[in-house]
Image (cartoon, rainbow, N blue to C red; front, side, top):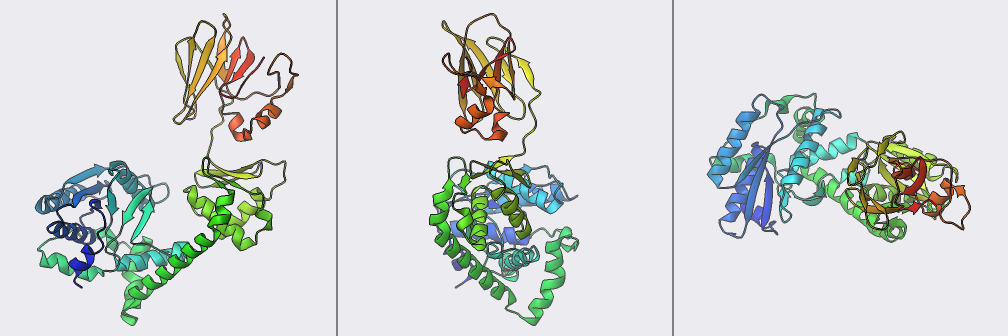
Length: 427
């Protein structure tokens, strides 16, 4: 089977957004899609070139990509991004690239990337270097999801030399990025120094690695299939929390696997084995009355009422105070939304609006000073016949985790607490 026919046999969809850097691999991908469109007129193609602004030739590369796309009659988007290099330039460029593609992709488009057989070997070795388990060693699959997008890698079975031969036959040129020779980057070090020696010794080495990656993928899928009933019994999709009721009864390997499944569902970075052990020891099996937490990158794992929660890092907002005036909106701190006060014939109504929810509180009419704040320690009385009780008990009754209690806006009238918006009013 020829390269073109083998490529076309993989095309199961009609709309593709092609990641196009201008290098040999992505140029071959673009050309193969254009060739496929000749006898598949239903194909709808767009290309996207990400201008990272990291190379002196970045503008020239964008111009080159535009010329190639015009020649192949494929619409091109050129998107400039800003790279955050705090976790390294490679990682920052990757995040900027995929975030931009995620924003530009149409809902019915599949994102096509030009990863080929040698890229698969490099990805496998980088996972090996990190000490990854079978999920990491699965490397790349032809179809997967990344950044909540469908990703299609139709070139994974082809060698780079095949792609370059095809481009020469089509009289298409490509960009040569001189940074690919900089062996300070791990992938370049493998590509330029290590893997050529292995291929000289074992010419079919890339194919063997690809088979091993596939075996790892199949084993990972089998483990997920076997554990799915147990996982679904404990996982609550609405808030992505995980119940720990039976966790102590599981063997350590099962504990680790279930937690990894939960972290995957939360789209969290996968911890190293030592971190996973620490998470189990310090959070899962912390004392029952503790409020433990474990920092994992930009997330925090917490436990409450025998469930695991995944949250962002929260700023301390307990010192925030603002006057709430009629028909005016107060912007709340730390992305907590807005609070708006309106008046009806019977009462005042406070509306707390976040990106995802709306909450209301009815307040008595009067001439009092109305202020909003966060955090309160003391006793409250919820209705006329009630007794005063510690507000901590009230939060517990409503099932509000400790870290959320100081992030719910509280309404004070003449200095007295009158409402936790959306949860309870104080008599």
